[in-house]
Image (tube, rainbow, N blue to C red; front, side, top):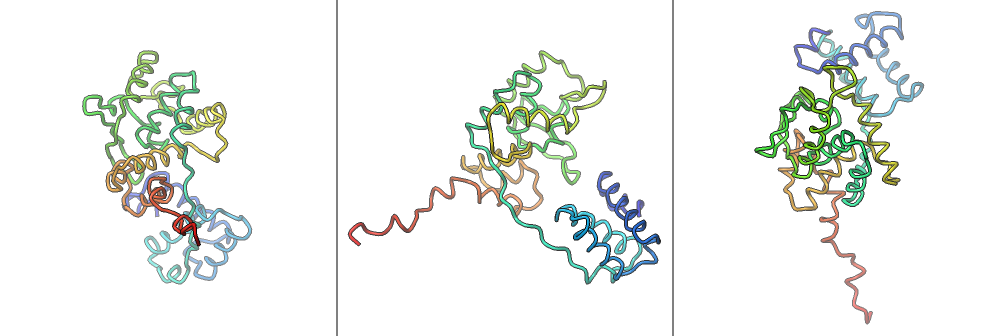
Length: 273
């Protein structure tokens, strides 16, 4: 199965999770998955839902690992073809307004922390992408940021704002990073994702933001603010690195620009009626 995962080009993280879940599946029954079929798989999936009470997203991820095993490695697609994965609930993302973003980015006294949050928001990055930025990824001449091996193993370019560039220059003068833009505690390593999460939570508390925001909220806010400023959905899709435009359209639902153009029918009723 590991060989099949590697040949399929799945990321090391996905490979690890798929293999771990297949191992858990085998341990649950005390047998090799080769000796198990549709009946046992149904029982195990119900165990994940009803007893372990996995979140829908986590459950779907584990389901995909088991599906990969039977479909690609064991060549027994009939085991999974009648088992359907429940759809997840569609939730709109939390978005900060521009004033909240400004406060969030200015309350941090530590210039490194401020630079991390500033480039994350201004370029619409995932925090995993921010963590792996290299000094050479900042192209100040073209005002672009190169994102290497983002989600799905794709490279892309996104925008570099003038404000973010000035912040990065202040940070560079203080820290002088070598290879990784934001270095970790150990020499030769980059900052870890958990550290970025902690930086965000501290900034959120200082800024007095009560919305259920996470570091990924900065990426949602970036996309929404671009659409509100008149940027086309196509260009937002490119900057975010979305494979499908359908993924990007979620920001139309939270954009005030689109809702502001709609008039309530109550305001269309003549006053004399």
